[in-house]
Length: 201
Image 1: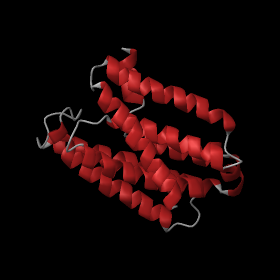
Image 2 (image 1 turned 180 degrees about the horizontal axis):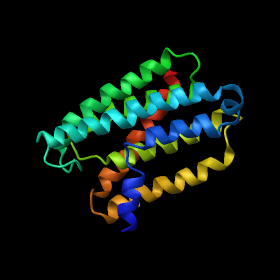
Image 3 (image 1 turned 135 degrees about the vertical axis):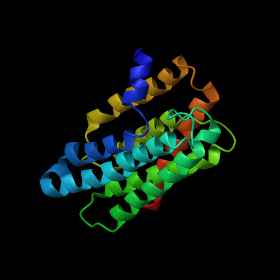
Image 4 (image 1 turned 30 degrees about the vertical axis):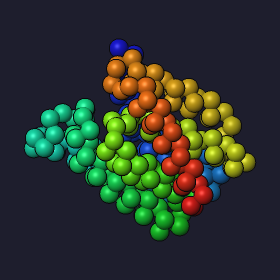
């Protein structure tokens, strides 16, 4: 039961938006220098492009019977949703790149999310990589990078994120949704994509 709750609450659809909210509302510099209406607009843009549109798209293709389940249980079921996520995540990154008021960390994170979705599409050809640990590994890598590179980054944030990332992988193993190799591959790919985003930005 607990594993199911963790899988739902820390679903890969929600993690990109959660991290954006953290950067906007928990980073002391962003809280001081970015006006509340601007932060709300950035949060809304992130929610629309990383949660609402991808989630609605998956729901629609399920109702239209293009996929048998919204849980995307097979590699074949994931193809269309992953392509749509690549598009929506790229658009979120593109908007952030051209919107000067967006904090650098949000811009970097959204690029990493786009790269991660692209990596997921590629790896899905060969194995049913865990999308949950892709997102969790990306978030953990992002927090590690920010803790090391940003002197104003909240120091107490890393440990809870590491704990949650571990819980995600454990929950997926308990539910037997993936083999261990698929779990570890998700962590690795998510982390590598965020490192790449850091150096690109």
